Length: 436
Image (cartoon, rainbow, N blue to C red; front, side):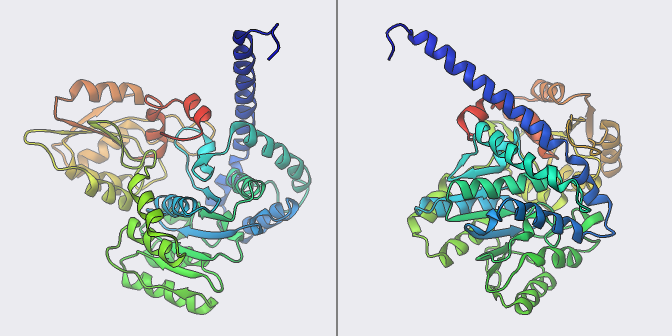
């Protein structure tokens, strides 16, 4: 160490460098989120959905097809795919394999979408890969396929990062559906998994569970091992038929039809050690998925009836005389009535609130008045409180809660993630590159 430089001076330099990295990271995030309009187009313009997949293939070809540099486990489904992806990636890492994990959405900040062996991509690495993407986008913008979407850019970033980190495996969660999802440029997955399927994104994927299953089944490819924990016989038939059609090995669902058991089955077929499988099952926690941030406050991003059903089933038994107070916000494009109809039988007081969705194009939070009216239509006697902002809603819930009461924050990852910052700031997540 230079004797003329004090330890305090070194700390100041390091803090300044960290601050500069964070500023550059935020600039990179703003640039990627500026492509959210093509993301919205994906849900609105279905005249030629194949072009979205074609565009992703061209994007990755310009980047050297990084998705071909490692073995892949591809996971789709309406509910539970993020949990299964995280568990399987953890099992592979615990067994000694360098493993990438790509999931969505994030709760607090975008680095949460991309991890290797349980550690998120650093803000500096995120910003560095963004510079690579910018060079490619200049060429792509001139093509007839147009600019990629935010999700396509994030997916390409994940592939590039996993290649740079020399991952042996990557566990990839599909974003929306399967057939035309950006992740479906994966040609030779080793394993495909389909978790529980319900009615979500019906404006894009179809109006029936069978139609949605057919879309998600398109991730199944030649010689892959195919696993599922779906319960509907018709859906199982669709997945079996698709497996036979493309020459994949279909493993019928086995009880219990839980995400944990599905992950165990995948770990077993990968011949991972039992100790690695059990260690991960016992130690894995996900942000905003049944996350207890205090002894009486739980966060869950359930944003569909099927997700809400699983969440409500996980709630602890009520203590005698205790109440449940729910702080709820839902995006305007979701099945608001279905979500509330599933939740309301399990709660006593409902606090509804809108929440900010900066950087997400046309997507909007449903108004508190709309949610309140829907709740009263479902149960006229329910105690509904309308609050104008999430922090005020949490404050109201704390004020109403007695010693043994439970506070639930749910209805959207955006709401749960916004309020999660009360316990884990973005700065904390960026510095530690983990959620807990």
